[in-house]
Length: 635
Image 1: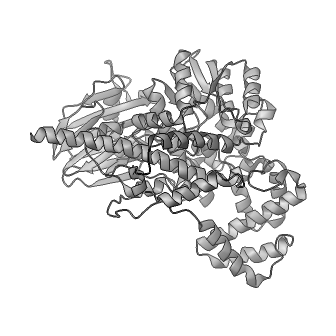
Image 2: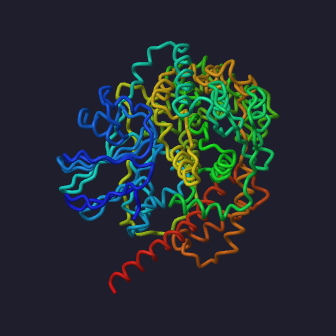
Image 3: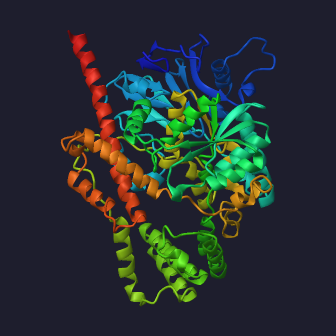
């Protein structure tokens, strides 16, 4: 039986397993029991200075809970998951840290409740069914950017949301999730931009300090991007023995080693290059065996294996990564939306000119690099106008949509040369084009549905842009990166550290105004300004992005070839996915006349279909094992 899960039947505690060094357990023998996995940076806050005896983490948390009650959870700072069995109030309460750095799953049964930090500790010991609602979302490209939800592909097995507590009442076994993050963003919004930049810089340093020791040998995942370069540089600045790791895809468009090398030279880092695996099928299966779920990243996260193995080889147990930085810092283009809302058309024009002059948008706009700055501004403005109008139409705000339409016709005469009466046709065509998609799924049994939980953890007095910014860190895609990375690296004995995922840091970042984030068209201004005199200027001010589409294509070709060799057209995935539609995707993917950028979504859908097939194999093996156990017990 696993050490990390416990099950309750009625009001009686059945089993608790704590034979793992990472698990802290405490029973106060007064009706309260606490089990904790992880680390708190502020553990000392919960230990009395008059306490002369040693106190483990679970005891410290439980003592604080008896004093603070549910208010405790907002104060916890660290990578932690816990459960408190409160036999006095007939509740079991689980809590997952504010960024979901520690996994926490639960399963509700008939008069039972199971909670675990490892999904496998639940599904290996209890049978389940496929959650077709989650399966549908897994194959939905648009679900990537939606708020993170608690469902898994296993029916009735759910994830606790970040910064949430889950409460199971032991009388009626009703389950609720509640947010426990009372943000302090309003306390920062009146600070000047320069004050906030200074606070952001020092808080990022503090976040790295909290997760490292002086002179500790650590690894950093240095991709050459702004986020990873910042983390690697500050770690060295603070005195860590930094070994930087660069993951080579072997594909020229995604090669950014020249940026990484500039950081290496600036800070004299011990640098290592790691090359991509040539066996994606085996890594896909290995990932499922470890995580219990198929790969959920946009570009498969198999670099996690190579990075962790290299860290172990170098004698380091920690890898610092810039993952999460994009969402925490935010991009800054929402400044353009604010200018539209304010009706500041002249400033909008000049801001768009700043933005396009500093970007290579060739992957999104044909022949971009051959156009003049004026042509680029026209092209991007047309795109921006269409997006704004369509967004308002989708929200049902037709009055606002046509109001903006009129204003743009007056202010940007170069954009539209069509009569106003054709506006309805224009919008209809755009909407139908946006909604056109491949329907991969065959009809499935709709009784297998689970409720979706969306993250709603911001105060009501925040404006819409700050609420949206706060939610960036908690989309399905961002959370999938963190969860998969942590689980894979943990299985290899390496801890992934995410300095950007810090409570105070995100609150400060959200408080920064959009004009500062826009940074005269450079975008991501909060981090760029904070890294002045720390990063090489070519890295700090870079606006280019690596193009991984060719690497994705090469990876998929190998995966599809190996999968096809092992599997036939009778695989049970084709009972769920329409094989005819899938074959249409393949025709698009391998059509040399279709540009690589247009293929990306097709590759993504086909890739996920294969990963789903591999997960179904894993699921069927689990079910076969459970049936065998039941059969043996009956005889």
